[in-house]
Length: 340
Image (tube, rainbow, N blue to C red; front, side, top):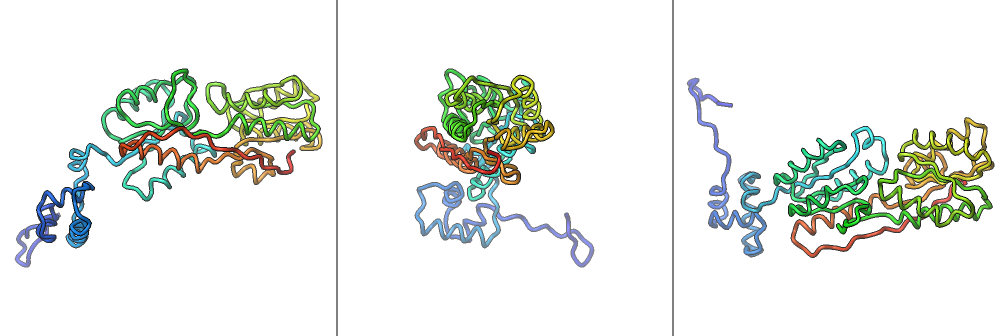
């Protein structure tokens, strides 16, 4: 916007401060100011302090595009969720991951870029964007099947950390996961310890590590013949699976659901069918989402916030060129409430 002087003539607009402005105020060279801005170790603490004070005094704002050319860093991190938007905002696990990643980045110079992909066309656009140098690294969550996106990004030199154990046979990427097998085993052992004889499970999708591992834990611990129906980690999926289980085995007396949302859907169907919970059918979920507390659901607690923070720290370490950290499997805990 152009200002005018008292005679109605255009007055020159003040120019924004430059590197040269900061250098003059600090009494150092332009190159020294540039090194301070780009976090170079070749600057003494005293000089850095003087330059930073001059930056504040002048109100200088570094040119992000120019800084990127020098450092080859964008100070942006992508969080790639391979689910539709409706799933992101309705699934307590995914929303907790987004919150924890954002919290971990809050005290850093990195910005979070949230990206939703589900179709092959969306994946192609995503890969072109990430390969284009728009982010410094990527966190991948909710992978399905032997998805090769992590491998392609790794081959392109993009730092990657995965949420959950990848299913691919050659997937040796750094990941942070929960002890899904052990947690599911503990849930079934809890039910059998309460004298339940016919324990069914509502398993998660078998193209996801959580679904595979929680079914494995159930099969390891179930005291009699297995009784399995599959859901999609949603409440509706749990309800539909519960109806199939009742039709196949009306005498079942316990259900382990591979997510709290599916457990809540199962309980609703049991009540509709006149079954008392837990007197007739005991129910255990997995996640310890807020809904588990509201409905007094026995469940397996996984450390979602810790998972998101650790994923972010591991990625930032890789971006900074540090040693590649090992994958982490976080312990789970059975939380007993009145549904069992």
